[in-house]
Image 1 (cartoon, rainbow, N blue to C red):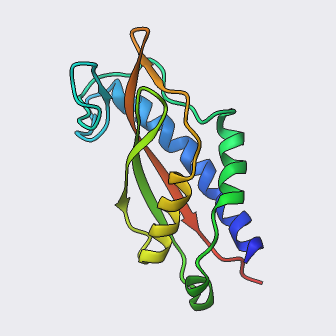
Image 2 (cartoon, rainbow, N blue to C red; image 1 turned 180 degrees about the horizontal axis):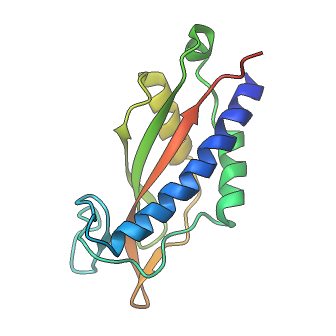
Length: 154
């Protein structure tokens, strides 16, 4: 099981980096999604508003540290491994002004509730992030992170 977990996440994190970059690009384009963006001080922290973000939130230590954390944290659900079930959960969450992860939910299911549940559990276990910034102030930012579950085929 451990080998499956490590190989699964190596590919997933590379996708995560591209998703984070996509979030930043969409903030400056016309294809900006309703559920992405920043939250002004005047708005409640759970109600994102549309607008660009000057600096995206960052996992402490950067992407390499996030990859290491997820490799150690994610446990492939035994039932799914035994049945050969694979998939990719796309998880959204808000990094608030204090760096805490809130509003963690499945945006797109991996196709099995145990895979989705494990992806959410691992993200909930993350430490506080370095918050995003806009115009020199910390802001809450909605993020998207794909978590792939793929078994090693021997």
